[in-house]
Length: 294
Ligand code: ATP
Image (tube, rainbow, N blue to C red; front, side):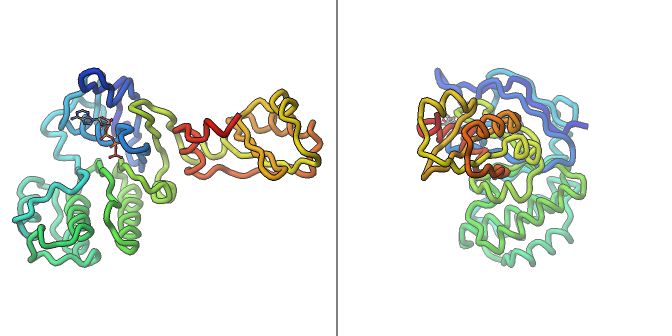
């Protein structure tokens, strides 16, 4: 079953596209990471899904259905910057959430409050930024939703709270819930997600299964015996590469055997293969290496 399907989703503000033709599928029970530089369209995507902003074009379906008010009972949302009321206490927020969502689990909330060490008697505005974020997370994870949409959930959290958040995300996935979250912290995403999408200026730069993408995009590194001849390298290596201190690093994309054979014709001292990290994949997808690569 598909938890979320976006089909050619677009959002335009006057002449500027915040999102353009975004198509994505998130299977049920999947932990899905949304990555992209500032302004890439992550929040716009989440807000379109939740009906907080109206898309200019495209289709959205959640659990195979068009969005209806009843469907929102199954979705928990953490907005960027929490959106909690400053004059209310944590306890008052919990009462409000429990009256809005039948599936809100008060025992689970109490347990999360204890783990995040939140003082529920204090007004939100007197809590630190990180404590406010932790309160918002405890409310979201206690909601009992089937789909969690978290916009920058790690924002403002200390390392202990961040680790707890990652644990909660992984546990939610193991319980069969679907978690979609955006983050600037690539390491967090890499440690938790099964699938991901990288947005670049409102369009999809890359998406897929993290393990599959990492495997298909291995980096081949060879130590060259003699200083490289730039023209010869360009002719022989049919992929983007970098040369530094007599070592050539080639970024493969499902064509590692071909590249390995091409490297061998240069008669290098050795050839090594490395899996790409998500950070490598990210930099390649958003094109920040363009200037230095062939
Ligand atoms: P960040 O990581 O900085 O939170 P993001 O990936 O979530 O960024 P969005 O907030 O989705 O990015 O913004 C995508 C683009 O849409 C940006 O260029 C932004 O300036 C533009 N945008 C967002 N809201 C509006 C608006 N109300 N009017 C005009 N442009 C907007």
